Image (tube, rainbow, N blue to C red; front, side, top):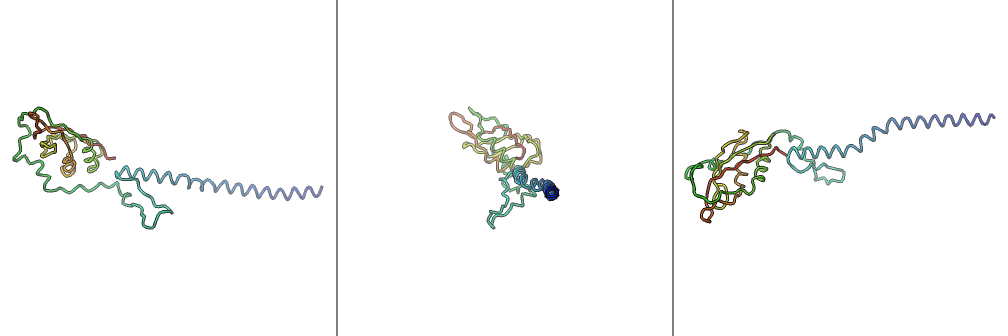
Length: 201
């Protein structure tokens, strides 16, 4: 009987030690579990949000396997600051100078009006330069050459006066048309287009 009591006492202390280690493990394990699984998810979300804000490729975060020459693109972390406006160049004013060209409201005999081919892609180009907070609507009167390119423009209406020529001049020259025709031949003619500039991606 005495041997049984000694066995119970020995096992009792072992059980107390086991319970103490189990309680300590339960207290520390959630902290360790919270760190690992969520880290990659948070990094992915940050990368995606920065890419959407800047309109650039997803941020490449450095890992242990990266080479020493690879660096984190920290400049994207300040992407909430507005981009500086593009530089206005002297030739941009020439696009709106109507000297020596037919007036936008001049009567011209044509069989078919110019037809734009890439309005949407030009609108996206302007959005990438200007990065509007909301959609901008612009209406232009354009002088389209016999080859389908833009020679002059007249801005008729815009829902955002801050979207000025330095933002849209280069993209506007990217516009391509099927030119107007008269007697079966392509001719230069004015036409009216509307552009919807989407919000920045």
